[in-house]
Length: 278
Length: 308
Image 1 (cartoon, helix red, strand yellow):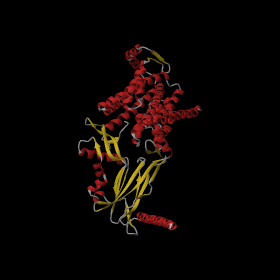
Image 2 (tube, one colour; image 1 turned 180 degrees about the vertical axis):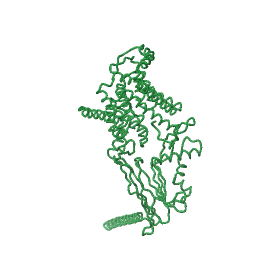
Image 3 (tube, helix red, strand yellow; image 1 turned 90 degrees about the vertical axis):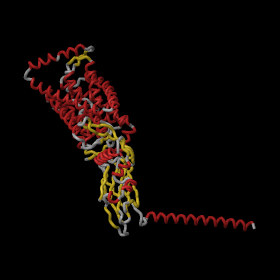
Image 4 (cartoon, chains in turn red, purple; image 1 turned 180 degrees about the horizontal axis):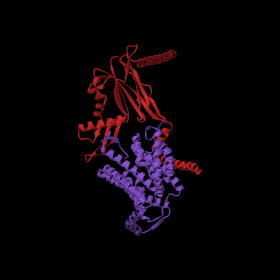
């Protein structure tokens, strides 16, 4: 009896063990199936991939190019927005003094503004997106203006004036841009739409993380959204010097002065030797 | 070829800073000015942020003025004693000037006062030097008029002679109370701090017309004085504002150190009046440029904050 009970317990334990094993197996199967589904986009899935998502800044860096490609449903319009994280920026404001002299008259603070803002679309955004949707996703300068806080301004009219000056200033330094018609779209053999854009990456764009958001648009609304990232980083000596200038400022200052003094004396000596013959 | 500047965070064609350095270094060696009033706006024009432009320029001037001082010292044209008194005055003046700026900012019209001081100083110095050197070129033929002028100025001379602590400045061949260079150096220091410039274009005429130093010694002594001012400014800018771009400074000084040597050699071939009238011409050209900037509608109404 005792032996029988013992074997029964062992049998029971084996049974439990095997069900656990089976359960784990089942779970893995479901999980891998899920992964399979995720990897192979279903018909309503927008994808986005930046080809050059890690831009390195070395001494010879003079800007780069970034391409974004992916797949979308057919018959949708696309909007691609590339932005840096939002922050606040303080800029000097020029105005007329005494009715004739242009000079700096104060400072303007722009809150919730990205340093970098580029929007590309298949068609003119005003024609494909409703105002509400543009504002919801901060697409286009009009929506960005609503999103941004400008101080000090007396009224909405002044805000509009200074925000458009802000955009002109940013466009001048190549870090703000909007354009349409640059995104290429083709139908692939699965009946889906491939899209592709190649855009210049300005050297004025500072190191940091950039977010690429792709929106599929239909009937004036955003129907799908996908994201990818672009990282811009200083490397090598550029990074060493930039870090030293910030974190080891005294040493950096002495180094700069030392090199300048050395160069001044060095060139003098070269000239003395050269001039000695005369 | 383009190089990326790690502090300015921008890329620049290396021919631009090397060429600018060469040109401004040449003026530095010729006239004994740092050339900040030319270099800083030019760098800003080529896309360098204003704070980085001003700070890096002072770094570059350290190299150019070392090179220039050496070249002038070699031929005995640096009055170290005078330079040190002017430096002491300039240092005190700088402290007063910085407080003055704080006061102006508190009053809310700093930019107007700074711009106006700049235009007036440049304009007055340019016009005075231009007229004076033109007249003295003509008067070379007419010694009688020159003697009459000397007599007229002896009242001012008598006052300066009556001050205590008179000392002889061998190199310049003049005698002054030590308070004269200290006070004049202090005056330039105050204005330079307010305008955010080195002040070479003010120091040179003050040495020529008020201290009555010979033009060629003025150039060497001014460069010696500028060297120390710019070492101090470079360190403060690097330490407090992190705005010195090492790579940009190296590119600029490649040109400016050579330019300063060439300028010093070339300057010895020119007469004092020719040097003065050329400097006056450049100062006047900069004045006109600033007046245009003030009156024409700017293309952008916003600019990077910080710096001036």
